[in-house]
Length: 410
Image (cartoon, rainbow, N blue to C red; front, top):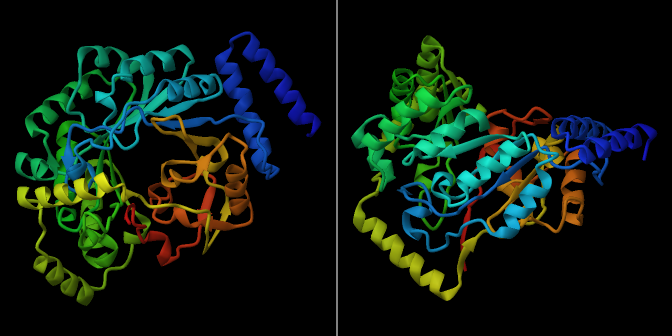
């Protein structure tokens, strides 16, 4: 351990003893920068960014999500262990992401967690379907949130309710108007999933954002699943078709001065012949979102779930042939905590468990990046494909953008 590291840790401990939480965060950040620069595998610094899954339950059954057929059978609220783990790290932490698999605004811990973040001077980011927005939430939002991402995959009653099953567009619109009025300095953005059927609405969603006073829209990748059988919705199979609609939306976003984020692999020169062919193929796809199809998936899920053969894909720390330089921001400074209290690098590596912040798995992941190798679970990571990481650069390899299956049925 260098003298510089010792000096920082000494000052950090003094700040902690004095409950100078802003001072602790500043020194912890300096320590993180030093240790990452030195390619340390064992970290003395603590996570600067934490994502906690307050609940894995949801009040919607969106067609691209496994809640579409699970109906919260696999859902749970964050345990006391998870919340205690979170609080133990908040003195060092600058930012907390309050979402995971479920809808955070329906969690019984949501208000409690906001007050806890205030206590330790921590800012928050959340992704929500905004189906619920109480007066108490509105009072706390301006002081806590740095950014609020609002799930929105439609621009009208028909388009919105076709995708966001169980939710009402009029409620969503009213809550969005209310949120714009009370959000204070919190940045608002719409968060959309790029699906083959709905990407044609991209410009309409940009227009809807502008009308609502939203100045940022993020188009993210689709999580494909062999169980839900949505491989025909995988946009990487129709790159020219998807790029055509996203580029049109980007032109409109620029006109409206809206920041639009979308996957780098669609910032391409469009092959017009391929575009015609892909447009014809998309038109021939029979997209099934009807109640009968949902019931079929529901029955199939219940069978596998009762047999104990349904679950998430098992992940191992396998390397890819995708070259990278630097280190993922999450691996260097982040941590994911699920409802049980289990710890992982991030939501993409949710099944590569950490026993503690410096366990063997944690050190192995850090070493992969320091050696210039991208782990397999990082493929199709939304932060990587949207070029939103500050500390990592990846080779633009087609394999980077191919989705991994997220559901396993044995």
